[in-house]
Length: 460
Ligand SMILES: Cc1cc2nc3c(=O)[nH]c(=O)nc-3n(C[C@H](O)[C@H](O)[C@H](O)COP(=O)(O)OP(=O)(O)OC[C@H]3O[C@@H](n4cnc5c(N)ncnc54)[C@H](O)[C@@H]3O)c2cc1C
Image 1 (cartoon, protein in one colour):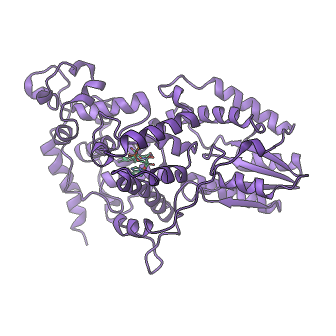
Image 2: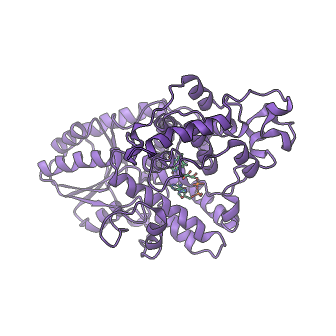
Image 3: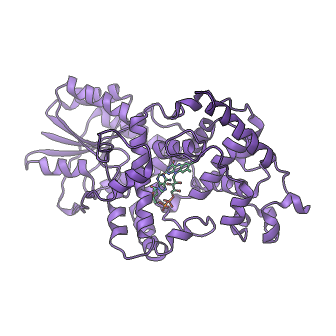
């Protein structure tokens, strides 16, 4: 019997339920194989997350060498797995960590159908979250729509234990198959096309654990207040590692839990938001295309390609918005406070459809997670569950004065404002400072946004 572990966005050995199960099932005469499926339907070439993900796969491929090669297959789910099964035979068993929403859910359903058709045994596990979408439910068995009661229950539930794997005791196999050779060739070509990036030196587990330990030691104590200040490292910046699965959420949870830092409870609550949004994604499978609140599906968004362009390149004339977009475009990551500010600006100040912003983030963020991103955008657009009410509209200048009071973050990303005094930096045009004139009048835009929602609110 060959036990095949299928890796996806769980590129690690520790706390890897599928890998652990395959090792446990393996008898001395059995073989263990590591597999990665290159699915042409899955990754848009040229996006930051494509490059970040595949650089991490390349790193993981080298890590696997400590035990056994990571084999690649290529093609759609049907093509790639059918080819493998035909070549390897059906004395095999699959192990994988499954997805509960979005593209991953559909892909897993296709894979399961194919395995069942071929009567191949498989085991699937939940790995990406601390609690599955079924763990935290209302007393009547229906899913929560509001975070606070969800969290009240979430926090009382026992979390999965953390297990580290002793890789020196594991042996796995190298298999010579035509489909693996084909996959390897495609992967090697793909790697040569990955572009140099900002985060190249921080790929992989060593950097991830260093980041986690540094944050827990220096950042967690003041997380409650520092997490809203984009000019300092007040948050963990672990989202890219959680996205590709180099770090397990279970490891992060237990590491945070084991400290006595003041910010611990707030940090753990943020981890619960991640679970909450995945639960929402599971129960609203069409949330990428449709507003979760049906009454807002009729909103008339502005057609404003010039505004969208200015927003996306960071040329709106609102320095905090512009600096945030430059951070995103340059690094593939953006601070949470800024994600809220720029999302609100696009939707409420420019009246542009939140789906356009969601798509732009999906192309630029290296930590892109469909559930969290759609959750965040529908929150900012006031169309999601537990979203910001449509009449409470962020004023980008006030947000800037409050969370970047000295203008340090703005200066970091907008060189032409580097010498501007703190009291002038949030609204340079008002002080005759040479900078882009704001593309929109916030006061007027605010009223227009309220009107856009209010008229739908009044329809019964
Ligand atoms: C419009 C918008 C889009 C977003 N898109 C994404 C996305 O694509 N991917 C993504 O991981 N997060 C997204 N978030 C949530 C949040 O901004 C990021 O998780 C956070 O900025 C990551 O930085 P960090 O690791 O330093 O966070 P920390 O403050 O250190 O938080 C720790 C972890 O908790 C989780 N987390 C924190 N806040 C949230 C939240 N509001 N929702 C869900 N999980 C959270 C993340 O996994 C994060 O890594 C989005 C938020 C908004 C408002």
